[in-house]
Length: 499
Image (cartoon, rainbow, N blue to C red; front, side, top):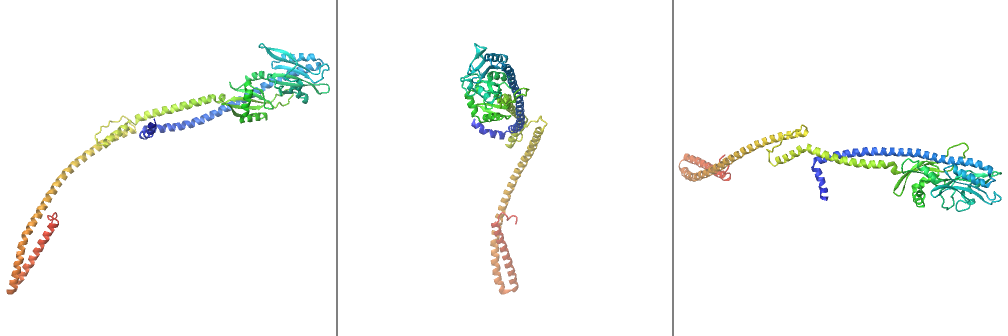
């Protein structure tokens, strides 16, 4: 495998069709990546904006739904409150009013009417309490004298209205560890003759029931609505697991969750992403604003509502589409590479054939047969021109072979002529040597005879002396010429014939 990987660059460099296919695929990949990045960016942006709009509409509808439930409880409680006021002196009547109030509203799970110490002289403390309970799977309204694990005079739902004298929604379980169904209570102070609170009417709404009602209002299958009070505690939540101590601890450790809770308690609007474990969420939140209704007390609850939107519900299909697109893009690029490789290989087959033919021609096979091209494009023209070039080259090579043969024959003739000239030159040199050797002795004899004649002629006749001197001079000249001739023939025997 490693060897094949190492050979891959060489294969790419040596194969033109692979290089062209790779360049085409790389160019297409760059264009495709840019297009996908732009498309996916704006698609994700559009999905996010759509999720924000859906969450905002759902949150508004959810807040309105919760407020309508609370408003119906407030109005019903107010009606029974005013019907109760004429009967404050009759403690038994309080049980009847509580029962009728619980029976009249599906949202009310309990009602308590409690009075301050010694309000009734015959009773130091008095509380009438009626609530719904499940007996053998059936919802039943029962009457009780206590609520929680401590005396009602110490419970928050009673002490807070008695202290402030204001109508208010409160958490009745504040400060208690009782194993009681989560509740939220609408508290109405009962005023005495001096306009001071003498008791409290508390109307309980089950948060489980309220959560089940609100759970149907959600923008996606896995989203849910939560409602926090001014302390950051859950008022409405989808199930008990969300508000379990372990989940609270895990959520409280996440800095982004802390920021979301802080913003919600501060009454801000917006959205933030956060994670719990391996799950990603978006929290869309806004303050809980109550509807303005004539006669309604408009004290601020300082509540905040939020839609918890799982990231998978927003971008699940997008992420799945993203993987599909990536897979299709990769498969398409591979298919494009294979098709380009196949088409280019077919188109470049004449070039491969021409390459092999050129190699054969380079080895001396000038008569290599090259078929005619059926293509009319540049490659076909190149093949036809290569054929003409091969024919022309073969013709010129034939002419060169004939010229080579002629030159070889001429060379042989010149070598023969050169050998003949060398032979003639040697013969001439021998001839000259022979002649000069034959001329030396007579010349010497002449020279001696002339000397004798000169010596003899000097004594007798002046004229004879002159003739003898001329003979001697001519003889010396002949001897010099002969010496020069012999000297030249000895030094340059090859040039003697030309001289």
